[in-house]
Length: 68
Image (tube, rainbow, N blue to C red; front, side, top):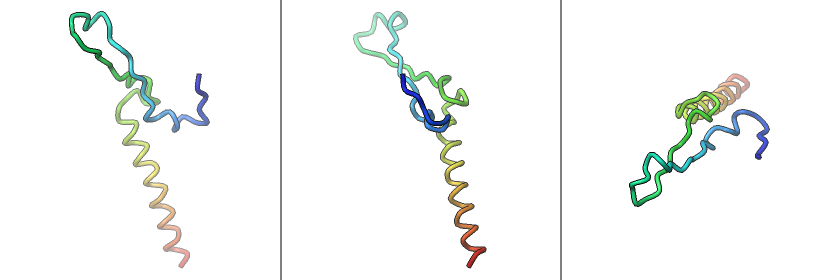
């Protein structure tokens, strides 16, 4: 079992699960992403993390502008 340092490191590591009975008649492997394993139970977690990290960069840039 992987232990994460914080919840943000879990975003983007959505598990894939092989479907068996539902697609038993198909001659291929079918996988499903279990998005409910994301911290916010949504595929939108990746975008939220990107916005959050981008906002931190904006604040950093803004702070440097005010100090010069």
